[in-house]
Amino acid sequence: MKIDAARAAGFARAWPDDCRLLLLHGADASANRDLAGQIAAGQAAAGTGVIELIGASLKDDPQALLAAATSLSMFGDKELLRIDGLDDDGQAAVEALLAGPPGYPVLAVAGLLKKGSKLLTLAEKHPAIAACVQYEASLRDAGRLLADMATPLGLRLDREVAEALFGLADGDRMIMRRELEKFALYKDAAPDAPQRLTLEDLAALGITSGDAELFAPIAAITTGDAAEATDLLARLPDGTAIPLLRALERRLAQLALLRTEVDAGRGSADVIEGQGKAIFWKEKPVLTKALALWDQPRLAAAQADVLAAERAVKASGGLADLGAHARLLAITRRAMAARRR
Image (cartoon, rainbow, N blue to C red; front, side, top):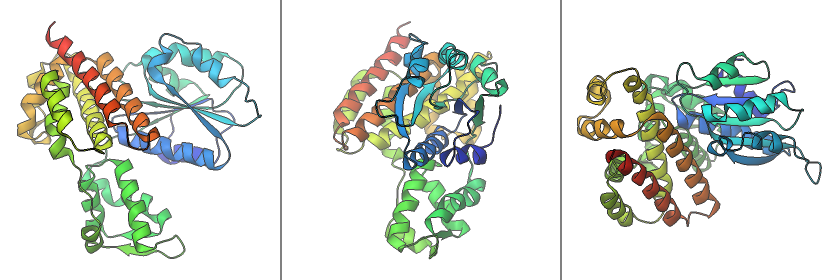
């Protein structure tokens, strides 16, 4: 069944007894990650443990999801299964879950599921699945979007402040939420003592998107230039793995969206040019080249790898840049292999 984001957010407080799986999908990967994080955090605060699975692993072992969902906790604790990178290859695993006995609830994050997706069709029709789609926000959504995040933190935002934050974060909801949390501490704000956030506050404790300096390595990775990618990654300072991974994730999501038009019969160059000013002119040649190399299965696998790399960096306390670079070079080699075909 279809639900909206507001209803999905309620799963953080109370998971409906009749829902076996919540599927978050759509073009806005950062929105899905952010909502999944809020739901998982809410469940964890209520004493529920969170177990993580990789969606790509379910293709080779469709019974793994059911086994995890019905496993017995040694201490009788409640559990929530979180899956990142679920796609149509995981449909058999979802069907096995639905046909099996009751178990732990499942929170699944997918990317853009194209029209005709069997997984999406199942999710939207089955009463035990809640499917929530999230579309990419635009600048005109900044006021409402930032207000929804800021109010529980005790912050009040003027329109120009919301638009500035949205632009600096390039619309990435997880970045915006983290920055608002930082500003709430800076302003000593709380729901019962709200504070106004001004442009002067942003200047005093501002953020930058960082995507400009990451354009070159992302271009090398997505076009399969292994030598250039190796050199550029080695030049990046320590601590840049997370912004690089998130910028790459946005690029892969963009390619996945554009690829639907290529799969419909249009040429890569024609699709990119058709975007007009929505794509910066300097990026068009790179995107055209990348779009010809990446089909949807490769993009889905790369997105799953990026999510896994980000989790590894966080788990290591920010000291796993080298491991993240190794995964990024593996993604680069896939694009390089596609160039040779």
